[in-house]
Length: 282
Image (cartoon, rainbow, N blue to C red):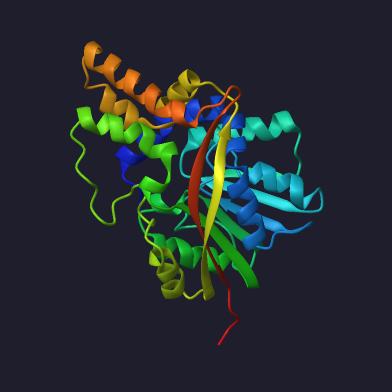
């Protein structure tokens, strides 16, 4: 199943900003990366596939973990994201990693290739999550694990709602359909685990990860970062007059100060880590 071209365009437009903020984004979501490493049981010398890698995370962090005898492949459907990931790998002089343009539901790898498959905040945007999970299982070696991270409910994640609850007062924002390609598509506990079960994963499991998203930037800089990361936010506020925009910014900054210290922004966050094992032939 193909991505909608509008969706691809939106992520393409955001790619330069994700590259610009790559290091801060890496820091913010390092606890999620660590959880994926633990649940996918990634170790030294492993071959690992990172799906929807964006500008290279968590693939680059995992490449440092598996070492020179290991191998990491990162894929993403957005060429601009893949180009950014390749630039990052070149700067870091990593030799055990490659990045390719590919779709999650049509992986260009033979069966039984990888020791682990991971995806951080990608599966919510897959046109067919069931087909994608089946592909993940196909390319996994028997007895090995996949692990994916998705957002828990929006109201548990002020990283998102501190902006959206203000912007939505000014811009008509009807709730998305239940299975729309949205950040909170799999927020309900059990929903994604059921997909893994249907796809044939053995012992599908789910756990709630609670942590703090920390960013060493000011309130103003965080506002700018979130607008640049999110094409949806940029699109919404583009409809506002200068006066309304000033009101929105003022209210958002006031909302964000609750999560600000002298040195950084810190948001309580909740993520679901969903994992499963590839079974052997029956």
